[in-house]
Image 1 (cartoon, rainbow, N blue to C red):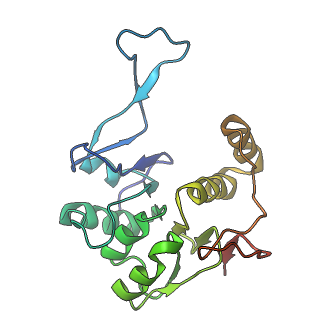
Image 2: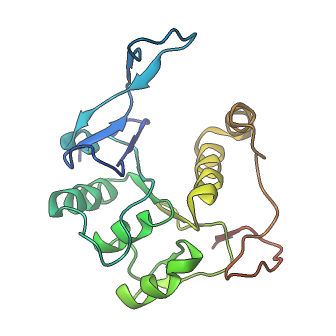
Image 3: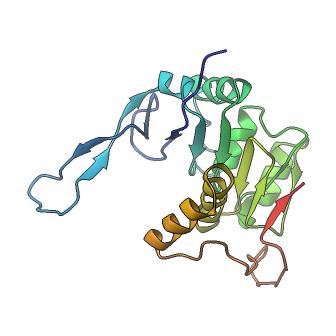
Length: 198
């Protein structure tokens, strides 16, 4: 089994090539025609870079029923998880994890408007409805894009401690650990817990 690094790689949503990913170590580039204090950081890595990542994040995906993730992307996700990496699906990224066969027999969550599709698409998944994110060890899913920030801060806290997570939250100007519940339908309902863990 190959040794995996501690950095994360992100499977992007958008017009980028399907065999490329963003993540570290980054290459600092500057946007042409603009003067900035900090460089605009971009890193484009080949699909094989997932073979070294300790954390793989799918931040979003196409709407259910659209073109599925490429088979080589699903295979890379399965391989990464099989070799010890943590794989996170944020919002509709949960459908990519499901397509890779990583959610069977586990609890998971996605955007509240797509919970039925997740249940129907992956009957073996124990779909949750009232949490911001679900931590199943090396599989993490979040309820939506904003809840994805909560999930990522949770991962930082879990892997690197509260000081790192809190510093990141301050940089993002968000609460380091939200307590308010998310809406699981068109009307908000208050819940005590924002995450589901075993």
